[in-house]
Amino acid sequence: DDFGFVGALIDEMASSHNIDTSRVYATGYSNGAGFAYSLGCHLSQKIAAIAPVSGLMLGQEHGGCNPTRPIPIISFNGTDDGARPYGGIDGWMLSVEESNAFWVGVNNMDSNPTVNSINDNEYSVEHFLFSGGDNNTSMEHYRIIGGGHDWFELDVNGADTNRLIWDFVSRYDTGGLR
Picture (cartoon, helix red, strand yellow):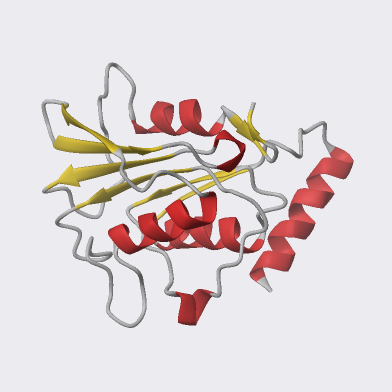
C-alpha cells in the first residue's frame, strides 16, 4: 500500500515536525516520476504539486487516476528517451501528449498552450505552458529535443532544473495558487 504509506508518512512528519501540510510536493526521476504522477492521482488531498522528470504516467487501465482537486504539474521529458519513450509504452504508459491532455482536462485548463523555444547551449528545448485552470492551476512541460533518460541540467535564464521545479511548485498549496 504505497499510497497509504506515503499518506501516513506525511501525517507522522506533520505530527512531529513543524511542516506546512498544505505545501507538500512530489518529484521523482524515471519510475519515481511515474510515482509522482500516481501521488498526484491518489493523494491529491495531501500533495500540492508534482514535478516528474524523465518518467511517464500509467495508463488509466493500470493507474485509475481520480484526483479530488486540480494538480499543478511541471514535467521534463527527452524526445530520445529509450527507457521512458516520449511516445509512451503501448498498453502500459501514456505518451507525454496523452498525459498532458489528461491533466489539462482534470485541471480544466486551456488546451492550447503557449509554446516557447529555449536554447540552453546544450539542448534545444520547447517549453509548453498550459494555464487558466481551476484554482489558477497551470502546467508546464519542457520537451528536451534529443534528450535521453536524464535528470536534465538545463539552464533557462540562469535557472537549472532544480530551481525551475522549486520556482514552480512553491507557488502552490493544496488550495491552488498562493
